[in-house]
Length: 340
Image (cartoon, rainbow, N blue to C red; front, side, top):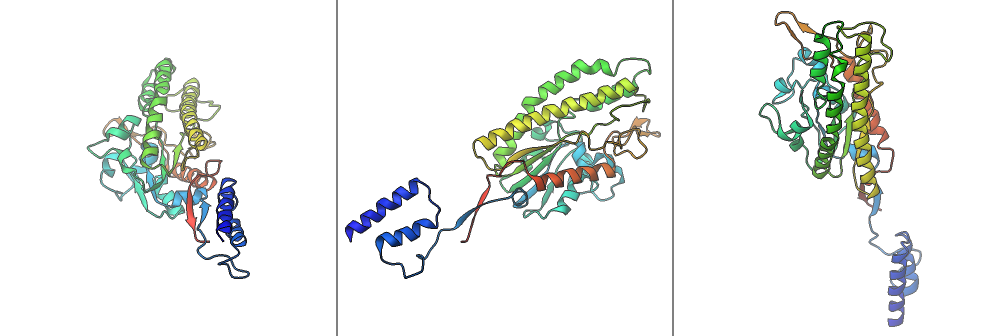
């Protein structure tokens, strides 16, 4: 009997080393011991099975946390919104017309939805906070399973860029003359984006982090002046948007490759929205972006200028919900134990 037990132990150790399926080991153990296993039955107490989660299962397993700037907060439709969403919505211009509530309706998240995007946010302000509110980054915890955000446009100074372009004299080159300064700010965005993604991963290592890019604001081949922006101005702004998106998407792709290489859980994914508004750019009959909006009484540019319309945010929601379903283009390394 001692010999049989020793043989079973040796066989078990060898089988463990070659990683045989869990269901094979109990049968062989019974055969070697020739005892404790009724005829035709396996031993009791089988181990739970390990199941790999799908991208949708990962996203829905906890809380959906929505962060970012005005393209996420809903700036473009904020003035039409009569229902403040949560504390600080009046300063951050969080709107029910944003893509966030639409994504929350499309999927059932086990931990609900937390919406904290804030108009004007930079990568730095994700850490420092705005208007006396907690930093957005601190809203993310271990229970987060999906994080969405758009960020980087304010780091590149898009509001100032557009203001300078629109306010210039019609024949001046003040718009495109900003190229060197904008290029420098976009280059400086890379380490800032890495810092943001690293912090989000540290706070929610199992979450899917989905970064939304920016749409091309003007037609690919503009033919007429729009809001004092000539054809060359529009082409240049389109090009700047592309450069900004390329920088962000490259950081995201590199970061996710690192996660996958080490078999880490969660993911970092990029949603390319550059062509999302094709046929509906500023100047088109049914634009998905607001053009220049001026408050005549106050003689100032309204903040909704060059932000998505309701249709634009619905288009964003469609892009993100499809990304949630599709996943990062690789297997998720999130697992759970399932009863056999």
